Length: 123
Image (cartoon, rainbow, N blue to C red; front, side, top):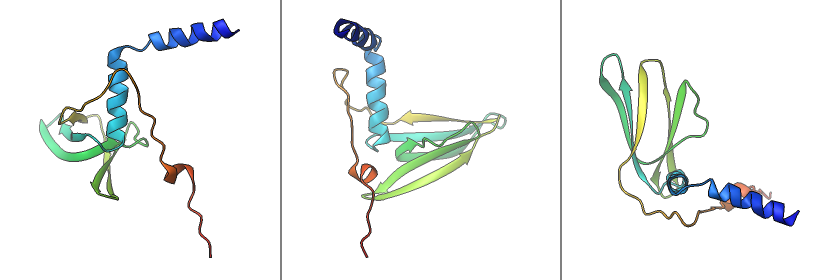
């Protein structure tokens, strides 16, 4: 049984290539507001840029096919959230503005105590 588990782990780890690991690490860094990004909304009918958002921004995990949520860090503990409607003629792209140092040899796990441990109010 032990050998079967080792074989399965080896297969799973070998399925990840360097690009997958780097991509996952860059996504984690962006989700932790460590990467400068530019998000551009484009109207395919008029060929015009409609809106640009730049900064330490991350795509919100509540986005759908019809809406895109963007959260940007604007101060030490300040954030702004933008919700934008998408349609068949409006599209967007997210550009990483600056290069970011990342490793293909390890990954990051970031625990946020404020999410794990709830606020308890004592009256």
